[in-house]
Image (cartoon, rainbow, N blue to C red; front, side, top):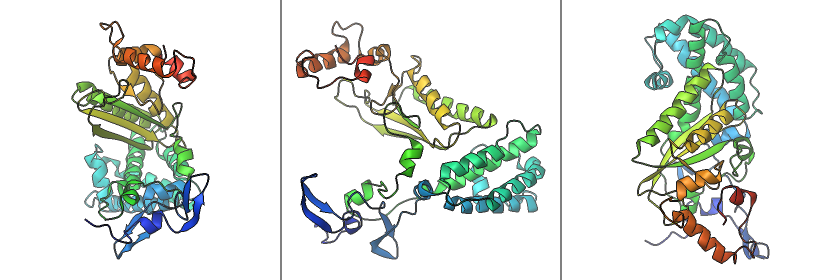
Length: 358
């Protein structure tokens, strides 16, 4: 198949040549490369891209779209209150499907919740980040000191409704054609505040962790169920993880200390906004649980990784092998590369602390 002369996405993500040869990058420099919003297809004009309309991407620069989410939540709650439960909006139906129940009993308490939400809407500051807004909403709706159990339940129900409405746009189909990098590279280079607020880069990051499992091992489900139970407990304590947990499946790797050690591997990634109290607690819990020998999760080398040398030996070595299994093979290869440590090509506090070096 011949590529179009001007395939969708190229102009938006690459742009015009600014400099034929830039010595810093040893090549041409383009106007939009590393400076553009992520590509979005305009259904009325397939050769034109819109700005990023993904709700969470917009929320990274400000939380203005969240005002509409609150309005939608107010509308759905008003409908169910005024109809005495006869009219159930799509958002509320989604919360009920995820485990919410007893709506009729909550109707009197939902009247109080409506006042809270309308007050939040009146005080809404469009310049605040998404995470900052969610922290304010959470503090109003998830009050662990509220003595009335129905009011606590109504607040929890409204919180789950807002989270569902806020993140539902993330799950929509994106069916469009464009050059491969315009589809695959969804980074918004014009907006870095999400990177700051998620704090997702580096081994000591507080906002993100990825754990690898044998996909057919029951401990994978145990791990996921434990995360859900922990979040339920948090919400009753006035905290919450605003983010996501995703499951990604892949094959095995030939790398001796690669995370994908099984024919069918599943990676569970947990990411959260650090603006909201409860997110870091969730990630900390996921790390502790993954390192429990009874769970046997393998932490991503390049993300949050609190593994000790004993953990690494347990996961990658083999006590029955005099060379310590795959870990021993890795150390032998490293010894060759570094000429028995004479060349400082691979050494850090992390590699020494995890026992990767001889």
